[in-house]
Image 1 (tube, rainbow, N blue to C red):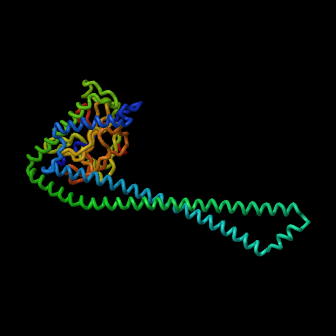
Image 2 (tube, rainbow, N blue to C red):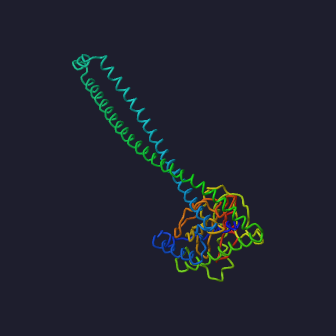
Image 3 (cartoon, rainbow, N blue to C red):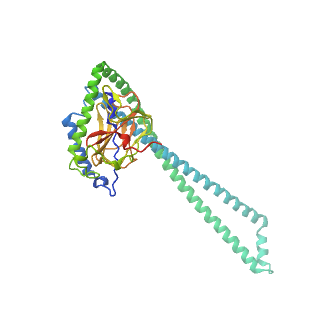
Length: 386
């Protein structure tokens, strides 16, 4: 079962469009209609287990909550880091303004000392000196400009310092708010750790149920059929929904266009644990299994639209993207899902993170490609690795 969960992970569509598709504008009404249809498919087929009174249903519930929590914690960490960078920048600006203020204060102090040492009688002597009245006028005008300029600069600096103080207070308040949220999330994470221990207990129960090879093969084959039914039913349910491009005629189902080959992006970097067609429990892998650390971002292989984003037995948190021309990409065993059904995605968009949901013991991503509902070798569509 765990091994098969990986199979739901991948489809890279590679066919690009010159003009954006109608659904690419992220129409909320259209997305809601798609979600409603997908939910109807799930309900009618009984594919997505949510009953907590079953081991699989409880496992799915825990892994869904775990994924959402991990996603919220990462978002909070990013927000706090951004606020801290802004705060550091504001403090640098304040330090520069304070340095400038001190320099101007020293300049004014020198003028005041010079004026004091000279005394008021020196100004009177200068005014009464008949030798060069023009020079006297220029000097007085210069001192007047200089003093007015320094006073204006001091006012600007003071206003700048007041603004920086306001910014710093606002950022500090926001940082405190985010830190409080982070503390709350970490408390939830502690509770989730208890749930994860329950997950391990449930996995032990599943292993007991699948103690022999025949039981494991039956579970694996059941997961395969479940995924095939999901792909076929979703494809049928969305037959009248505008896609990226018109699908190829049925005659082309066994011969994908060669122009698409080698253009899709790898969804994640890492060594291949399993290649397409490799043997597994009497069957064959219909995708590739890529090793990657838990929490590693997973990106869309090509432009498309999300048509499934939920927990599926044997595949854990599974995301399926439809690309048009009969192509779908599947990404399974995720830790968190970042896109919802109906959302458009661009090649390179982060759509999930690597995990070990679906009962996996090792973090990895299963990436598969379906063309006209049939598995094809993902490596024939992916760019060559350097």
